[in-house]
Amino acid sequence: MKEERDDSYGHVLKYTSIFGGVQGLNILIGLVRNKVVALLLGPSGMGLASLFQTTVNFISQTTNLGISFSAVRNVSELFDTGDAERVNHFVKVVRAWALLTGLVGMLLCILVGPLLSSLTFSWGDHTLHFVLLSPLVALLAVTGGETAILKGARRLRSLAAIQVYNVLIALVVTIPIYYFFGQSGIVPVMVLMGLAALLLTVRCSYRLYPLQLTGAKGVLGEGMGMVRLGVAFTLAGVLGSGADFVIRSYLNNIAGLEIVGLYNTGYMMTMTYAGLIFTAMETDFFPRLSAVNTDWGSCNEIVNKQIEVSLLLLSPMLVAAQFAVPYVIPILFSSKFLPVVDMMRILFLALYLRAVKLPIAYLPLAKGDSLSYLFLEAVYDVAVVLLVIWGYTWWGLTGTGVAITLTAFLDYFLLVGYAYVVYHYRMTAAVVGHTLLHVSIGIVAFLLAVFAEGWQWWIGGLLVFTLCLSLTLYTLYHKVALWNKLMSKLRHRFR
Image (cartoon, rainbow, N blue to C red; front, side):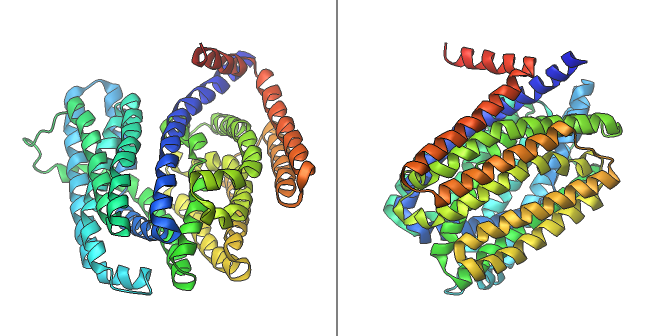
């Protein structure tokens, strides 16, 4: 029994490290790009880019019908049968739906351009910007369909390569455009990056499944099952993008583009970049959870082990980040972005809860319970909008960090309670212990980072980080197979 447990922990570590490693490389390259862009555009320029990107994401999420998510399961199931003819036919279905949703999204972006301009900006007419950004919506939809095909066909190496090439191209393309054109280059850069992502993805997917126009008539009628599966995911994405849109528009209208740029930087550096630990959720954890969705015991085991590994890998990083962030921000961006430090330190606390709740949040999707998934997502999105408005009103930018962390606490208790009643989810004593221990360490690190000074700041930070890292390594050591796999990976990398 112990051997099975160790193998399972090793599997979680393996895929978390693989996908997290790729994501980490992408983030590292992206940080170099962000540093240069921050110097060229400043907080207001980054705020403007954030508003455009958030709006495009909202339109894209509204119109893509979840094809990039739901098609993965269908393609994967057919791929496992080994029936090449059926796979090729369904690929036509995916591509037809992706193209249709892309065209609809592009047209919608053009039609609602004036409305988007008035809702997003309190100054000037930006309708033309949204019209020029409309092709990006189509590019995102088609790219999403081709990405789903590659995921379903298990072409993970190709997907990893595409991500790396994307950030490299972004580094090469964006810097000269922003250097010569400044904020006027934001829209062209966004469209060019969308085109680059499409070309890279199509290059891989068309090699695997060449484009075939013959026999495509009537395929839209065959994709309704895929579309229905993706609707819940789409609506949840719309709610999430809509919440981001409302928050950034509110901050822009109340405080201006500079605050939007600072908020976006803080959010990106914490909630988004922590995705390097959570990347394996969709690619490995979710399919495994779906495969045993009718077995309550197996679901509990898979979820609990994913939580443990996520916490163990994330906790030392978060402790180090509490003390490093004042020095990292000027290096990665500029000293103009230092006001975001307190917001980020509070957001680091929310990430502990995210590591625990995210595996649980996949239970409704794995069981096909779309209504529950939508309900839980809607509650979170409404709560985060209301609390961010409240937090900024009272404490400014730091208050947004307080608001998001409070929302994470509320969402955590709601998810755990809901999963306990509806899905019979039970946390193991190990998960409860790890959660309480690492959250407590995180709070101590936060208090020291904020209130300690001089030698107390340095000594205290070093002691807390050493304690956290020691506890993590001790836990890994007692999960023998997991420790051996980790040591093997380290020896292989430094050989």
